[in-house]
Image (cartoon, rainbow, N blue to C red; front, side):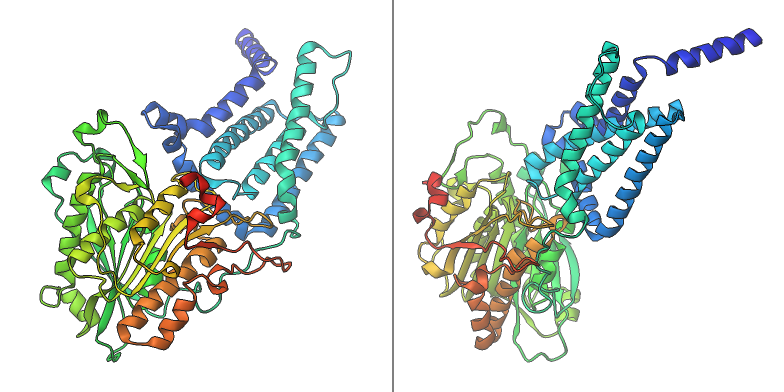
Length: 549
């Protein structure tokens, strides 16, 4: 028994003293941090899909950190103070337990791996918008490195090659951690200018004044679509979600206008767009959120050659999606008609009619492109022939297939078009929206506007205009000023015209055309103006879009 104990202790000591222990801990920590992404890659997902779940969590963490800056600063100071205390004890001969060192080395590996994922997300999605998360990574890395090896120093001549290597790596880790921490220090100590608060009242403030009732209507997916649907959306019951404003009794109006909203590619969940919907329905509109299948796999998808030109593309996937949207529009027509709508609509609206002749239509990304086709479907139903707002946010290329080319005729005099692009959109090109303007040549120049949202990294939080600005997950101060203010004004303009309220219509109109009311973005806390929206009625004359022509 005594010999067995000695043998066991000897094995433990050999493991603890092994030169491979710390590298193994680094690798293990990195593998744990990367496990989800590695698993998705092994399933055949591309890199952007493999890191997408972490991107969503990063968003959540970042918004949490922004709301608790003082607490984060205190915790960071305590962590660094603890690491310095451990280093001082080490100098006096009191070393950490080997298991504690092993755990700290795992933490270092996990932080390095997490930073790599963050770097990929930053390049692909967030474009420098998140400042505190890399700062936290830097604090953890700095504290762990100091706790394990103490204060950094240059290699000494009497050290072995292995010790010199570890010393150099330790020094590089300290410098790298400091590089991560430095940009976030002004934010942590509260000296970085802060962006303007969301408007407390008026456009861009909390949605309202009306609450809403939501009704879900499944619509029939045509067989030519259902036969080629992929598995990634098999949990979705494709529906038209109708949001009805809860108006006071006897509001003294004939009815309420209609809004139609379409989602982005592979993002049919209504949960990403409830803020957008709330701002529309809160002004007194009925909002139809249409889910459509994006994971369709036509036979010709493997053999066609992609051509993208003049804001259009020849993806064969467009065609089945258009058939699905046509089916959804037909169901919507039935559900809003006075003679065929159901009891929920009657109970919510009473005797009020739904007035699709006063129409708001728009969407995000692929949904922005498809809203242009859905507008043609709406025109065929005589919708939007009195008042019309078109709002595409970071729209993708629309279908080039002849059957689905829109040809807008007799657009009403009261037509406003906003085609919006963002500076740091890494998903779709700005030129698609530039060319979409050509569809509205018959509309007054000041009523068809290309709106460019710039990024402003002056203070903290940084205001970075990415592709995801209209989604709930990216709802920040920039979205309140650059997006939701416009949505409120658009809805107000349509509702006012449906009621014959010309005073409100004129006020909303002034916030929707090329004036400072539209472009102003408020001021940073030190008085510096936030970079304004850039508005173009003829983008071909701007060097910013020279590459589109």
